[in-house]
Length: 302
Image 1 (cartoon, rainbow, N blue to C red):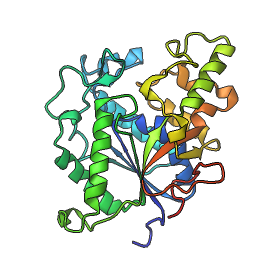
Image 2: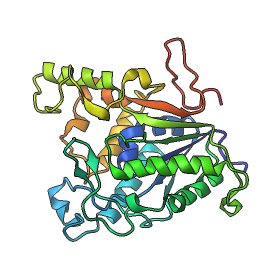
Image 3: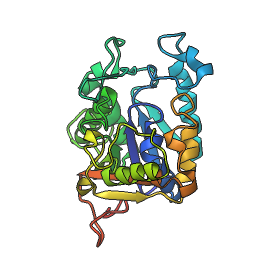
């Protein structure tokens, strides 16, 4: 195909807004560089919390309709980022948000009651095959998804990790279900990561500025738990400073999910430094690190 970009990036996320929070600056950067960027969203986030009072009627346990609404929010956010290729895994509505509750140990788990087609309960091969077809069509050199913990334990994030990992393997098998397309080997796979050091610095800056409420449960000098990645494990850092304002504008489009005066949007006076740098762990392939031991381009070496 003559109009296919030479470099192609595929991201696999669980719900609308996950893509912007984790990779908004990365996506905007690569779109600006002419890279083909494809996003696969596994569910519409139908059971997400609605943070806007005048939209509470959309909640799953009220009138419903949140998934359709979040579909429009995602489209608006991607328009801001410049991403034009977004797919729903298996088609919109194939897999349903699994909801979320909190385990006594402090990490997310599935809701007690979920629909039959909840993503957490999806057959792994069935779900992976949907993604295999996308991989073989798009032929990405780089795939981005969550780690095995899904960032904070959310069952749909964990399932997205499993589906993406399995699909990346199956897509390259020359004898596997050729009706799904011509086999394709994904050269590099990355897991999203949140820098522990950067989080500690941010909490300290908030405390120094007199803010004792934001992230009040977190001690910048204590154990931050499994939600953050020790910096020694981070292979790749994308400098998104030139694109972070676009990221924050895209995030604002996810209106039901993000408080407009909440912690995401604090620190604008410092250029949203925390959200400008997006970090990754290499999970397949080789990270081409610079003299400082850090890779700065997901496509390095390809």
